[in-house]
Length: 442
Ligand SMILES: *Cc1c(COP(=O)(O)O)cnc(C)c1O
Image (cartoon, rainbow, N blue to C red; front, side, top):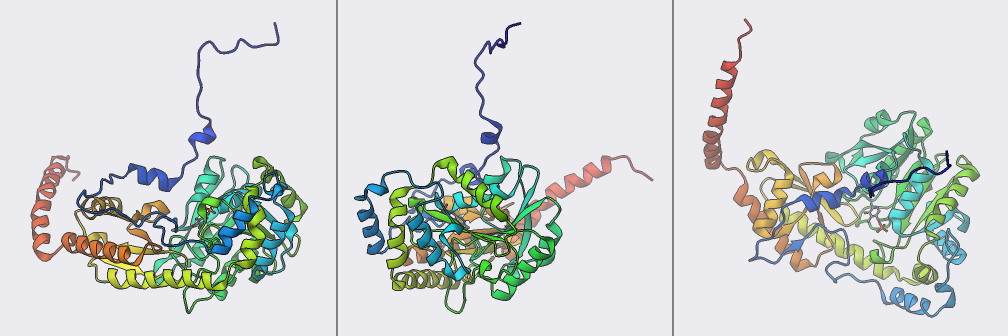
């Protein structure tokens, strides 16, 4: 027999299992929605977590100028080191000093924070292991992990306690195969900001069970007045923490795809192998965009505090506006956020019996009022919806008024309840007939 097999007789080219099993849940849920807006009303998308959508929020001139200058540099055109230019990593280390002692060696630059998340998960978890993520929570973790056979398990956040972690549930979810606990703070979609003592409670559980933490802090410092941001790494005594961050949200430049991760491993638990592993994995894309890397030191060092303060103040004011407006919406319960750029709103579904799920509620809100909110399903949290707070004030006000009108129209009133009750009698009656048709047991 010759060493060569026969080869194929016909074309049969299929997408790989990885490709087929990789999903972005937000994309797929949104694509399946029937979202034809009302042609008489301008569509207002409160769904897109991109602060640049409406053009009202822009990075400061220093940041734009830094990239303008970078394009002239010869070194902004070549490949960098896989883990990033040393000067850029040094700048990230200095910028991240609030997380604890950080050197350039602890920093790996990435193509956006999502890539940092992918690096963190894939360096820690094998197929068959699991990673714990908050519910509700941003689901990029699922997108990254599931195709690789890494299971995503959820721990509960408590909507009535400012979305704090249900600590008992978190600890119960941990098993021998748990490779990491993800903590998103400040949170997307909840807008919660955890206090030090709560972060310490989470760290205690991680320490007791010897599980490292992946801290998604892409919204670091985006906290409203009266709240304080603390990086969980700054509090960790012995739990290794991989912090993921980037320019995306705080500097309002999601399209620049500049993120990073920082390894905090003060007791050398992760050791050299994890750092080497991160270098290996970073090699898959030959390092991130060098144009932005070259500009990074200037961006991180020269952006004035006043810019950050103004952005946070704007978002906080939008949060207050939306909260005050939506509190008047019958059947809704907005939950005031403490930071980030979103608000979660509970939909009391029992008061909207027309709609089986919040997906239907959201669909009809689009077709009647042309306001698009993201259904809770996108965060594995039905009966809620998320709105973004970065939209201009007049648009936000208009959107809220339309949501209120929609709720007033669809909320069940006593009269409507009667109507529905009579409707309900019919299926109930037929049910009874069915039951009667069943053979009686006794
Ligand atoms: C937006 C977001 C990211 C992704 O950021 P990129 O830098 O655009 O990749 C990661 N985590 C959370 C919680 C986010 O909201």
